Image 1 (cartoon, helix red, strand yellow):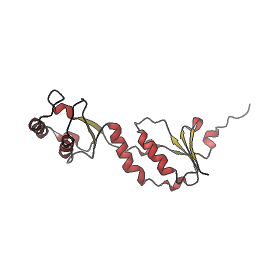
Image 2 (cartoon, helix red, strand yellow):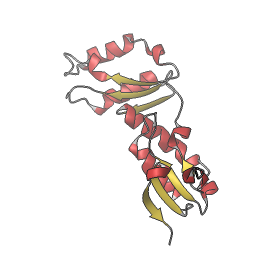
Image 3 (cartoon, helix red, strand yellow):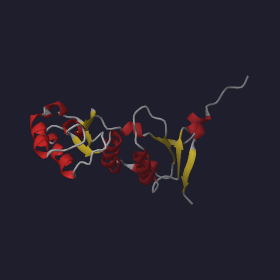
Image 4 (tube, helix red, strand yellow):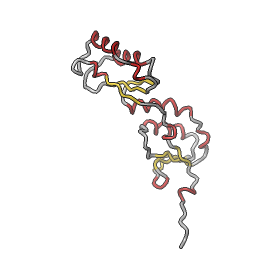
Length: 167
């Protein structure tokens, strides 16, 4: 019987796994609706009073996404005021979802990666991850890899989708 050879393991593919760069930190979604009258109406005086009485220390060293879970029309200054209250405690603050928060973290991190190690190599951007890597991070990774890589694929080595090849 012939020996089974793992051609994937022997290939010269370089794997770029965004999970390896996943920013550490506890992520929290902070809902402004909790401070709105019936979740929909912002009364400035009541809103400011609620923020003043809120325990902001619970967000110490956390990554916070500010959003509103209802269809309320919230003025821009409301999120800004919440962010100002969070600033002494939170490590990172964004307006939006946890996905927006993760995308923002990758937008800060990916430009700092040394992509020269992928010079003239076939690169596969690993597709399956256990952590919530946003699509924007994959797009950014491809953007930064393109000037260096000979080719870029997406997915797993056994079933990669070709995306780019230098001419």
